[in-house]
Each structure stands twice: as C-alpha cells, then as structure tokens.
Length: 136
Ligand code: HEC
Ligand code: HEC
Ligand code: HEC
Image (cartoon, rainbow, N blue to C red):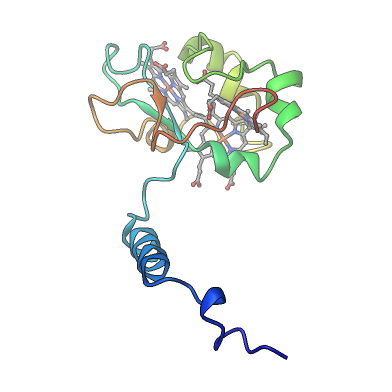
C-alpha cells in the first residue's frame, strides 16, 4: 500500500499549509462580540435618539425555523426590508411577537436590542449575506 505521506502527489503544498494557517489565525483573531450576518436596523432609531439595533440573526435561526419568522410572522427576507417601528413592536408585532416576557424577555430591556454604536447603517454586519430564497 502507498503511504500517502510518502507520496509527493498527495502531500499538501507549502502554499496550502500556509493558507490553512492564515485562515485559522483569522478565525482565532475575530472579536467575540460581532457575529457575521447580524442585521443592523437603523432606519429611524438613531434619528429618534436611540442606538441602532443589532439583530443577531444566527442566534435566532438556530432556535426557530425560518418559516416561523419569514412566513408565519411575515418578516421579509431582506435586510432593511421591513418597516419596523417601536410603536408596532410595542403593539405586539415584529420583535414584539416574541419579546413579550412569554417567549423571550420583554421590551423594557431597551439596551439589549439598541446595542449598536452610533453611525451603523441598516444592513448586514460582516458582509456575509445568508442569501435569498433558493440561495441558502
Ligand atoms: C426569529 C426570527 C427569524 C428567523 C427564525 C429567521 N429569520 Fe431571517 N431575518 C429575520 C429578520 C428580523 C431579518 C431582518 C429583516 C430586516 O432587516 O427588516 C431577517 C433577514 C433575513 C435575510 C436577509 C438578510 C441576509 O442575511 O441576507 C435572509 C436571506 C434571511 N433572513 C433568511 C433566513 C433563513 C434562511 C432562515 C432559516 C434558516 C431565517 N432567516 C430565520 C428574522 C428571522
Ligand atoms: C426586542 C428588541 C427591542 C427592544 C427591547 C426595544 N426596541 Fe426600540 N426598536 C427596535 C427595532 C427593531 C426598531 C426599528 C429600528 C430601525 O430600523 O430604526 C426600534 C426602534 C426604536 C425607536 C425609533 C423610533 C420608532 O418609533 O421606531 C425608538 C425611539 C425606540 N426603538 C426606543 C426604544 C425604547 C425606549 C426601548 C425600551 C423601553 C426599546 N426601544 C426597546 C427593537 C427593540
Ligand atoms: C420567534 C420569536 C422571536 C422573534 C420574532 C424575535 N426574537 Fe429575539 N429572541 C428570541 C428568543 C427566544 C431569545 C432568547 C431569549 C433568552 O435567552 O432568554 C431572543 C434573544 C434576543 C437577543 C439576545 C441575544 C443574545 O445574545 O442573548 C436579542 C438582541 C434579540 N433577541 C433581538 C431581537 C430583535 C431586534 C428582534 C426583531 C427584529 C427579535 N429579537 C425578534 C425570540 C425572538
């Protein structure tokens, strides 16, 4: 039998080893706070004197099926694609459908949602789109 380590054709090239090393380093160096594909919501927030909202999409995606939010609750699958207002949330719509002290903690914890640094624009943080229907 051939020993794959002895077979020069099967050995990883030094360039490939280097690349894997760099990737590992990048992963290790990424800050713990920001997660890829968080959605920033700042259509009115900052104008109205509160911090932009950071919506941790993956945190929610591992807890609920896509269809819960994007079909049953009616969230459009587009960053910034929903006209979300605090009045609607307080009225039990959008985030308020779960953040009501029953399914998840309630709306009095303003800073848990309004946690973005001033100046963040509505869109996907980390530039890592989930991809639309048919792409994920
Ligand atoms: C708990 C609710 C919730 C769940 C579950 C959820 N999403 Fe989302 N999703 C949202 C919200 C809120 C936004 C942001 C909408 C906005 O900016 O107005 C969003 C945005 C998106 C976007 C546009 C941003 C991007 O990353 O490209 C896509 C695509 C998407 N969701 C796909 C999915 C898929 C696929 C699943 C299941 C694997 C899923 N979502 C599960 C609430 C949810
Ligand atoms: C569960 C998440 C969540 C919590 C908790 C929350 N908000 Fe919001 N809030 C949002 C979202 C999402 C928006 C829409 C962001 C945007 O695109 O501008 C928003 C928007 C706002 C706005 C902008 C004006 C408007 O009417 O849309 C104000 C002001 C605001 N929130 C105040 C508060 C205050 C004060 C609290 C605490 C008492 C609070 N919010 C708690 C998610 C939340
Ligand atoms: C389908 C239900 C559902 C919807 C809709 C929903 N959430 Fe949540 N959210 C949850 C649950 C459940 C948790 C976990 C609560 C806990 O840990 O006690 C959570 C936790 C969070 C957290 C804390 C994440 C962490 O790291 O601990 C934030 C921030 C948050 N939600 C923001 C939002 C915002 C903003 C919206 C609207 C754009 C929203 N959520 C809509 C169910 C939902």
